[in-house]
Image 1 (spheres, rainbow, N blue to C red):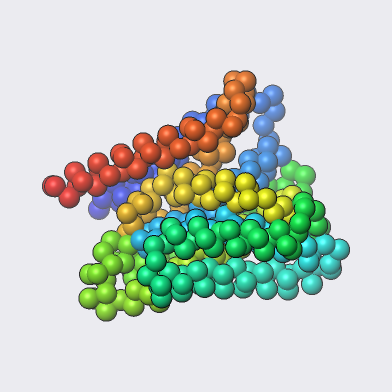
Image 2 (cartoon, rainbow, N blue to C red):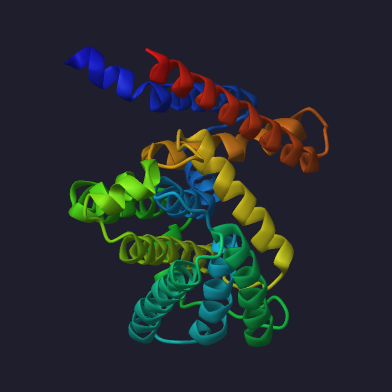
Length: 318
């Protein structure tokens, strides 16, 4: 039984080993490593880790959301626009309201996909343009702010790394574990593995897909709030959205989520964000333009997809 559990977690174990190796290399290059540096790393991975987790849920259910980065940017701009100079109590209420907005945006996207029967990639690509347009209307240029007490509660202050660590772990405990053990979780894996078979088994495919996109929207909303807390501003640029979306897909795939659907979890994508964080840092240390990190990330994603496909095909033959 223990051997079976280890085999199931082999991908996550591999991600941990790679992340630890890269992290050890980076730590050895720093003159000092302490709680401040730990907080810096956590803040560097937190927005992408949350987006990767949200993307992973949708991919496991057989879809993909190319608007997830735009959803995060929209919430970032809304938070920066309306939370500036607000009291802590008002900022908390606005945070809950914005998370509700992000859930509604995700659910609406899932509804359009379910009702129109148009491919996820087309609907979400079009949605991303619309959301970025709204973001630019709300916050035409970088700026805005956030209540400092709330920002410090989310991102920590000075060398306090526990707040961002808690923000990273809480979604796994509060959202993923209950979802994984619920009927919706079973339906998610079912429609990701075989949508027609899931339908014949009594799964409401359309409703499940809407719920999955709503959950992905919730993760995007949390990412947008976190980004506002870290930067104390909002930025509507489409380039941020595009990079975030691509990294969310890469994080999900590197974290062991099969693009074909039906396979994966959220722990792997959260850990994979560490690898995505260390790649440009390592390149910079070697004097290489960090922009090349996108090439390396893309190459890694292709290799992982091919390797995952070969492993699954061998498993089916056996």
